[in-house]
Image (tube, rainbow over all chains, first blue to last red; front, side):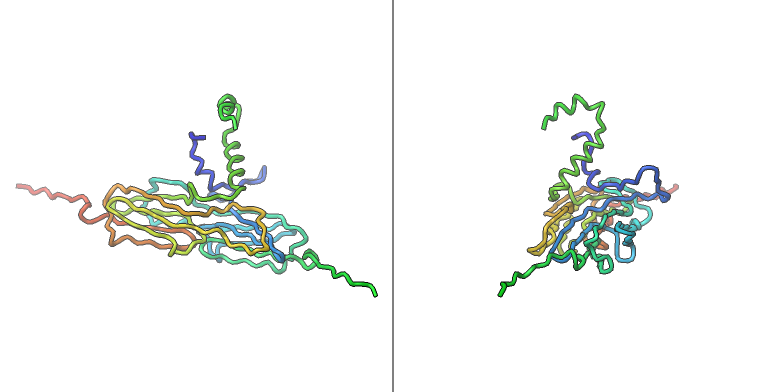
Length: 136
Length: 142
């Protein structure tokens, strides 16, 4: 374990399904996410440094939610990289959603390189409390 | 875990797969910053640039100090606040305090250091001190 810097693994490259190749030469990383389930919604928070609200794409195809962030490297010309712990590239991650998400009401926001998605639960998926009536 | 056993099987095992697996194990339980954030250092003859990815923190939470040839970056990233009724399904994002010092191969002009924080990425540009720049000596012909 000491032989290879484990750090490099901290920013993980996204995998591609077998047989599919990328056409762009930029690297694509998997953003680290927190997924939090609350009473009425599910929140996905993704670290995507270098991404702003214009460069992130969120698509929902059937039940697959894809987040894709494009990153333009911002380093002034003549600089030479002399020490590197991380690579710069795009971000991609896919999530499958269950029926319990109300896909029309998904909200997304980006702040300081962090994407926050709020996926509201559909009315049917919310836990309903059944009141027990006393019979007369 | 028996690490010695690993060495025995080293040749037949794909180490990267193991790293991946271990990484997942570690990341799955929530990362607190030991190694993170990650840094890159860029150089030209008269300027050094340190960049780091610290998404989600405010620029006020970062402290940069420059002394002579070294630059120190300190800060902390707070964990996301979850309302009481929230439960984590996945917790991969790191949090915690960090501090890192780099030595640059020349003396930095502390007054001209510029730092900007954009889209979760911190850029610190440090020009070489005038006094430290090599002098060009003109040769006079007699």
